[in-house]
Length: 162
Ligand code: PNS
Figure (cartoon, rainbow, N blue to C red):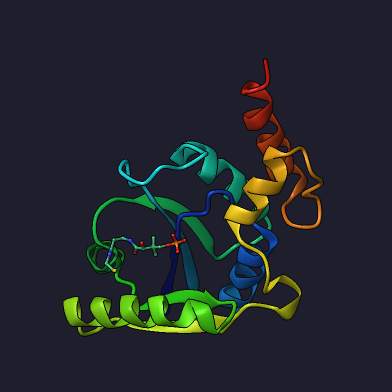
């Protein structure tokens, strides 16, 4: 059974991520979408909120599981018996960071491979940070995220309005 892990911050999940999940789920027998639980990294959403938004977005995929993980990705991969990490590449600018991460992961765990999927051109400009910025100014994010995520963003940012 080919188990793949698609790790990330997913703060929040966008249509770009969903496109990668859709394609990776056709390659993997089981795809684990793994949300990094890192208390040091400042996130807009809690891990539980991130998991909820991903669950809602990928509820129709039978072979996709959603979990959070702490610590090193390779340790989590070993625990899950996964040997393939999936990452999306939007542009050349992503490459250096991704290459470094993939090489470090392979040094730490020789059996792991990283598979890069090119982000659909349609979403190549999209990032969670950009989406948050648009939402923070009350902009329309409906082209970038699911209605559930758009609603969650609205709730988050409205909380700060007095
Ligand atoms: O969505 P992101 O923020 O680009 O995802 C980055 C992520 C979560 C894949 C990466 O930070 C990660 O794997 N963190 C876990 C810690 C780890 O294993 N680090 C070693 C590789 S540099």
